[in-house]
Image (cartoon, rainbow, N blue to C red; front, side, top):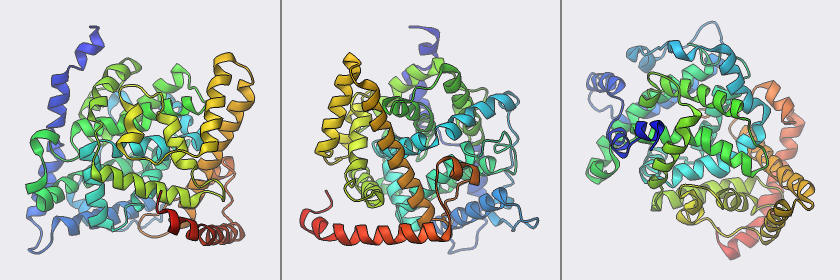
Length: 427
């Protein structure tokens, strides 16, 4: 056993599983106790979601007259970057990983990161329950998660994690929201929540797993897609996510950043969190339904195919994720293409042309999903917006004519697919 294995014994993960965020939870509990009778935790979760949306819009496009934030101001939880986390050059390099490979990372979010979260039982229960209660729209959570990724990583400027900027506002807002979610689960599900087994909702182990989903799981998915990050890129990206984790109150990022030496022992421990659940299966079904609706004609089964492909050889038990989530079988043509790609890479025969086709399919799929989220969630509470420089880099047209053309195409797809889906069901 090496020094890094000794840093991550099983006992430490048990402790993390039973630890929430006592500093912010104490403040939130006092805030809840001071509220008028009849104002439930559910009402306050909805208010936090709305205030977070307003705060992020103000951080992205300052109006000069920021709105009053009842909850943010009452909690008074602004936080500076840690002394170890203000390396501007390293932050910029970590963010550049997203800016340079954004469509691959967007694809990884939908085809790898979210399925990993759904395959963790306590995470799936919280996501399904709170999304239904607070927003009545589970897929809105997908747009919110995508916007978080853009706000933290997609601005290609070193100040997005500074106080008052979008990434910082997102981190603090999520930390507050998680505390209200714990209060909501305690209010609504206390008799059905197995605290001995799962620990408190959104506990420190789960937060660490989520941080790994957005960093390590993403790199591994990108490597399957044909994009291998250098050691320097991975180290910088993990550093940036560690700073974000510190702001979010993740215990293991309190005193310093995670390093590449931590990746293997943590990944091995987190693999045991993957289990089947009804909530996970339901969340995955809804996600696939949404993503497949975004695909061009003839490509409807592309998302499920990519999920199978990405997880096929995944380590630490993650290869079971499609089975745990009851992901339908991939398209026959994609299975044939994947088999050809594997054979070509073994002998390097025609490997480059086949890999190029697969990478093109991944970028195309990622672009279709991002465009659909922009068109569907460009306004309202769960707004999804990307900076103009990213839109240009990803060749996403946002003119009125382009949006109208895409709306017509979606209507045509729905019309043509409806009879077949009615006969075959959701799969």
